[in-house]
Length: 316
Image (cartoon, rainbow, N blue to C red; front, top):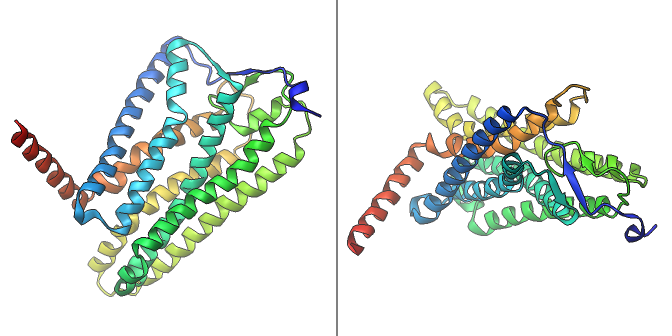
């Protein structure tokens, strides 16, 4: 059936999270503040990593890409949520919904692959330290980054195309605060069984596959650390990958919760809260987990700020 002859829906209404007016204002302030901090923190990582020569290493190259990914990921959702909270508008056009859904899942998928790539980087650094510079050459790092983005692109494009080719001729109310695929499929007039199965298989393969790769990498890392005789040496070595392991647990933990948490007929669906926290909390915490507690990065930040102040004085 031709979708153009069936679809009467030209825009959707995002139901969001039912809250009182006072709580909506509070949520607006919290989300706006977190969003600004996220932009500043992740932009700082990118700028300092580019300007400071001592940070031109594979680890900070991957971290800069993660920071760019986090900025894009949170920007695909939060500005629209904040706008809807302050204006009271809940509508989004059909094509706007298509774009938001695609960008959100593209960036989310890419993040899983990038975290797996960073696990490999930590594995090489700890298990093969003498060969690290030989293995993790700039060309390989670039290929790994491109593979993560291309993997996210191909994993998401088919899902998005098939979903939005479905006829939407009934209700246009999406029971979420953004254009998630699951509530969208509930609004479709056609058969969604094939798409749901395809989404489940592709999402499970990617999430569980990248998680398995990360866990194997960290299994090898833990085994290598256990062979270090000095307790101080063990702690120092493990500290180099503790930040990344923390982010892995946060990202995969929230994703698995949203997948297995059963729907409950409560006033507020807990999965919406977890999805919102995942969208804003992880990009917000990453700069603090990875960089602002890291001595090397803090020294690089000081050098960058000093040079900026020095050149500003020269211009004056």
